[in-house]
Length: 255
Ligand SMILES: NC(=O)c1ccc[n+]([C@@H]2O[C@H](COP(=O)([O-])OP(=O)(O)OC[C@H]3O[C@@H](n4cnc5c(N)ncnc54)[C@H](OP(=O)(O)O)[C@@H]3O)[C@@H](O)[C@H]2O)c1
View 1: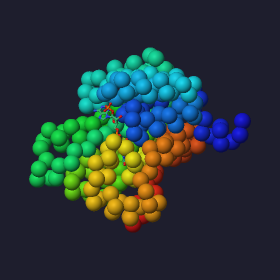
View 2: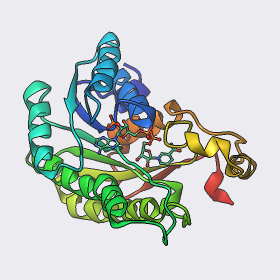
View 3: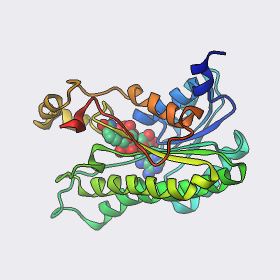
């Protein structure tokens, strides 16, 4: 077997991808499956979950669809238990599910604030805690959190999203420090502007041209262009990489 195949091989590993039924999560689920992992797709729309699991099975991977709203705290542990009963102990957790509400600070209401923080931040902590409790006794694990350009920059129109994603980076670093003795690596991927449902509304605004001009690559990225970063961070190639933020943004954050 050649060196790169060994380094990035995920055969025998079990991965959980929240929000794995479309967009970046779907591309990551496919990337992990192509690298040999068994993959659980956790999201609210079970029809979409099953559809992607069908694709993963076609690729030769074991896959399970789990209907889950990550805001339902009491359902998180049972969801991971279901994955572990079906595929085996979790080795890789990708905290990818997220939402954004366009609501400027003076217009924002408490309900939308809570929804964003619960989905984008609280679930990341709670799922990481549940997964790490399973990983720690086995002395191995990978947690990968999806950050954002708005982990770095402020965003006048989406303050709750920006706050949640800034916190995700600090949570990543904090859990990485805490879990390092258990040989669990915790890292974040920071995608730039990627072509998904989340960013579709931007395409019809003046912001779109601004983004293209500012991005050295001169375009939005495709979801599959984020998948390689997840495969790398999930693999033995990244065993000495922890508390890091891997930027995949076509150069956007360089200026
Ligand atoms: N697209 C970008 O340009 C970009 C840039 C930077 C960072 N990101 C980050 O990358 C990640 C994926 O973004 P995306 O653009 O692929 O988003 P997307 O296309 O809107 O997909 C979001 C995914 O999250 C799931 N989801 C949303 N709320 C959920 C909940 N309460 N419980 C469970 N699953 C839930 C959705 O499935 P259901 O609706 O079926 O639940 C869907 O699979 C997010 O963390 C986002 O912040 C994206």
